Image (tube, rainbow, N blue to C red; front, side, top):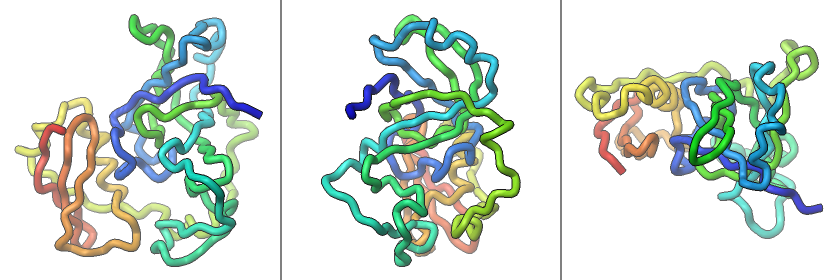
Length: 225
C-alpha cells in the first residue's frame, strides 16, 4: 500500500533537537497544516471548524532507515534501558508513522497556500509530511483513567528558566511564551546531565544557547540563524 502525502507542517521547529517530545506539551507553539496542491480543496475541510482538536498522522521523515529493531532505548529512561518498540513512541518504527493531537485554532485562507489549518501544540518539525487529518472525538478518544507506563515517571517535570531580559528581547514577542515553554520541558536527552555543557536550540529563526544546573536552565545567548 502506498500512502499519499496530503499536507506538510509549517512551523518554527527547523531542527529535531528541542521539539516537544509529545504533542500538547507546548500549547503556545503554533503551526500551519499546508495541503499539497492535489488536496488543496476547501470542500475537504467542510465542517472541520466544529472541532476543537485534530489528530495528525505523519511520517518521522528524518528517521527513515532500512530495517527495524524490536527494541529501542527511550531517552526518558536514560538511553540505556531497552523497551519494545510498540511500547514506546520512538520514531524508529517499521513504518515511521507518528500520531499527534493538536488544537485547531482556525481555518484560514492564505494567498500562497490556499486553505490551511492553524494549529497549536504540534510536535512536528517544519516540512514534516502529513498523511491524514482526523477529528479528535472527546467522547471516545479521551480516557482520564488511562495508565502511562514508564512515561508516568517523567510527568510534570519542568525546569526553571532563567532568560535574561536583554536576550529575551531578541526573540519576536509573539514567540517568547512558546520558547520559554519549550525550554522548561528540558530539551536535553535524559542521559545528559553535564552542568558545564552548552546546548543550542533552534526556534523561530533564533539559535538559543543554554546550560542546565540544579533544575535551572540559563540562557546564555540568542543569535539569528
